[in-house]
Every structure is written in structure tokens, then in C-alpha cells.
Length: 371
Ligand code: GLU
Ligand code: MG
Image 1 (cartoon, rainbow, N blue to C red):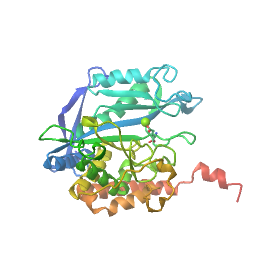
Image 2: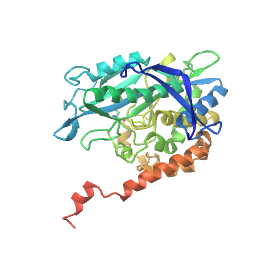
Image 3: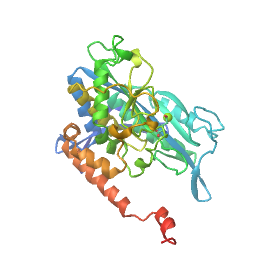
Image 4: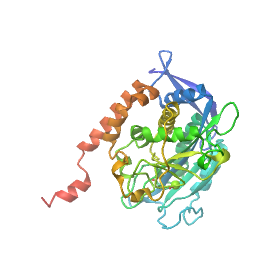
């Protein structure tokens, strides 16, 4: 054996799509020690850091995806009905994938807050209930598997690719985060005495998101395709700014207050590993808290139409650039573990190089007869 996989019995439960079969997630050990490169381990360590401060990170995932079907030997979109955003009906989902999926997820003990058709034809979104960070990551990972199995049974294929089609927008993995004060049991991001009801702690957390934004991108946007999603006017972030209920910014603070006060990081795409997305965002927030960073005033207006973008950071535009920034971030390297960053960067650099070396159809069509 290469390593030891120890079941975490809290994750034990039935697999509704395989009769008489159960599932359990495991933690990996090598020579008696936890495996530092395991994404679940990376996240556990960051949650422990918060607990030392008497805080429990609470997280919810919004995952977007497309559904495809096979037609004349090609994968095409499941339905091609424009303008159906936020609906849920048989016109946009004739085989009721969403209904079956919700039933499966409920049987697996994974509460779904909302599900709907997204903006682009055949694009959908599921919002999972907020939970302590590790449980939220486990459930986001299991959700991806449950969707695949549900769709395969109906001869459909879901894709979490960041930008599967040239003529349609990408699929995001928006992350909602708050911190529970373990002494009071209350949401520590809410303070009615502060401006907009946002506590000082929350402002520091937001500042941490902004400070480490570049370094977390290779975790949030893990493929070469991911970087095709960051376009102006796409509802994916382009400038690293924060705003109040603003979907054009990197960090959005949704309108809810009280226990619902939270930070939404809009950077990740659906292809990302939930453990690493959550670990990266929480580690960034923790540095903001530890160093009392200030995020400045929220950005007002449409961030895609910044009149003076000269002093605003832009998202990294390639996987190579994102990896360079990750490898230079000493703080994040220590938080995620040096050995994790080394292994992750090596793997992803190889993937990036394979992409750079590959002659694409676009290049061939563009140049073969014209030069
Ligand atoms: N699909 C958009 C993205 O790639 C997000 C749309 C929304 O605001 O839900 O991030
Ligand atoms: Mg959405």
C-alpha cells in the first residue's frame, strides 16, 4: 500500500444510486503521520487555526454547471432555451435531473437551499446549506459525484468546467463565509453598531481576501480553461475590489444581516477542489484578522466600468501567472503547508506546459492558410 486511509465515520452514509452501498470519506496517513498534501488535511489545519481564536468558519457553496447530451456523436447542450434564468420547470429540465438530484441529496443528508436554471442555456445552479467548513467541503465534493451519477443514469453528462462553450458564460463556485463566535454561538461578522452592520472582524477578513487574492487564484481557478471565465461583464470578477451586494466585484457582501451576515468570494470556478477553495479563502481571511488589515471603502457602481483601473489589481490571466503568485506568498505557503504548495505547483505547472505545447484547432484554423 502507498498510504493508510482512515475512515472519518462522521461522513458515513448511504449511496442512494447504488443499492445496498455505503460511503465514507477518509483521511490519509503516511508512515503514521497525516499526509500534508491531502486537500482535506490542508483545510482541517486552517479550521484548527480559527478554533484557536475561538472562531468556527461557516461556509456555503453555490456551484454552477452545464448539462450536456449526446447528439450525432457530439456533446451538445441538454436544452437550448435562452432567457430562463432562476426558473425551475420541465421546459428547462425535461428529464427532471434537478428533482432527482434534490431527492438524492436529501437522502444523503445534504440539505439543498435552492436550485434553479442559471443565466445561460443548460446552465444550472445548486446552493447547499451553510455548514462548518470541513463538512461544507465534504458535501460540496459529494454533491459533484451525486450530480454526475444522477445525470449518467439519464444518459446526460454534467460539466463543472469553468468555460465549456465559446458562446456562453462560465460556471462559478461562489463561496459564502462567516465566522461563528464559539463563546456566544453568534455570527461574529454582525455588529449593528458598525457601519453597514459589518463588524471589525469582518472588515479584517475581507481585507485578507483582497490581500491574498492573487495567491489563491491557482486554487480557485485550477485549470488552463479557468482563466477564460474572467471577462468584463461576465459576473465573474475582473478587478480585485469589494462591494455591498455588488456582483461585479471580487468580494460581495450580500444584503442579509444578523445571523446571515457573510462574505461572498466570487472568484472560484466550479472545476475547483472544494477543500482547496475553502482553505485558500479562509487562510486569506485569517491573515487579514491577525494583521488587522483594513479593506477601505466598498467599491460603488459597476466595477467592470472602472474609470481609473490603474491602481486596481486585476485577476491573474493565466494559470502560470497564478502559480507564480502562489509560490511567492510566504504566509499562504506556511498555512497550506510548504509540501502541499510544492506538489500542487509541480503538478499544475506540468499541466500548464502541456497546454502551452499543444497546437489548438483555433491556431490551425487561424494560421494554416493565411501566413
Ligand atoms: N456564472 C457567473 C460566474 O461565472 C456567475 C453568475 C451569478 O452571479 O450567479 O461567476
Ligand atoms: Mg449563479
